Image (cartoon, rainbow, N blue to C red; front, side):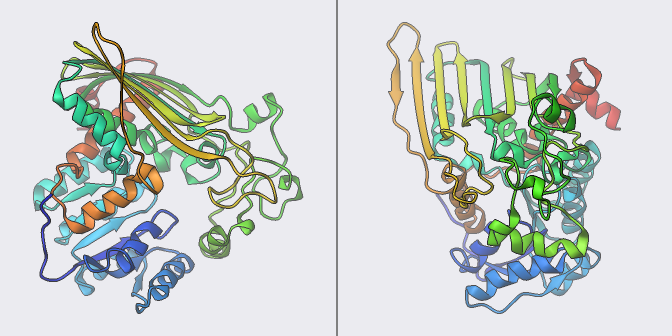
Length: 439
């Protein structure tokens, strides 16, 4: 893979210093510091920025300057930023991407690219106006199993793709987490069909080299929320975990004081912005769904059936892609079972941690032939190894043909937004009509 070598490292600023952003802070100050330089942090919460600066100083570097969101454009100019890494709440992504492009910077954003049609329109206009580069952090593209699946489809081994079936299961540890933090508010996250499923819709678009045209969806809040908690006999009487005795024995409770990382990033930062990371998943105020089914038609004639649940006893996914000459089937298990557990690395007060046992099996079933298991290797690290490979690609400027741009981000987003519109109306939604309404 060719690598673009810069005479001097590119200068990066990170806006939004929550948990996910630590991956970029660590990369730019340790494993990838020869390829890029972290020169600034931006966040309304100074406590969280201080946590990130401790990562910087632990790496033997001087702390970087910190800025408030009101100082964002001044930061770009004063710190001579080349590229902004956007890790803020989803519905604010567009504000920072557009401002970065207009300032002559490139933008790397966590998925989803943004959370609504207005944000998408503004990003597209700014990119066309400036010619700047927008990269969306679809790390699942870099997972070696997913790359192998794409290679097989592109080789024509199953012929022309007719249909895709994609089932994603979030377990009671991971799935519940979306219902105790800001993602529970659809205005901020777009719901799981935008925030989470944008990963999956992008994979399908990429695998079959197609764009979505029509979407029909159904979704509901079946498991989480105050009504369902009472209905299923799971409700506990507290608003947020910290300081409430009723949460002590609740297996769904997130005890931040059991985790040094969560304590530093969130519990000790509450006094600045009032953000509570440990809300009751069976409390009021949840406006997103936890059980969703989606039908998608593509410009190639292919069809997708997609299902996402956020309350499963195990975590993983099943994908079947059927073509004119055969079928590919991928089964991926990430966690075999779920036990009461707050954090992937810190078990709760002596209770057993879930057994992490990531496995992948990929089968090729040609017409008239016996099935063939295709050897695949699960990558090391988070997202099946995708995060590490993505960082190597992004900060090394590796021209691997995988890097997702603003068009890729838009196509994944539009599938989720059309699905949300279909759930609201009860009718199928043409993406062209959705965009017409936007104008």
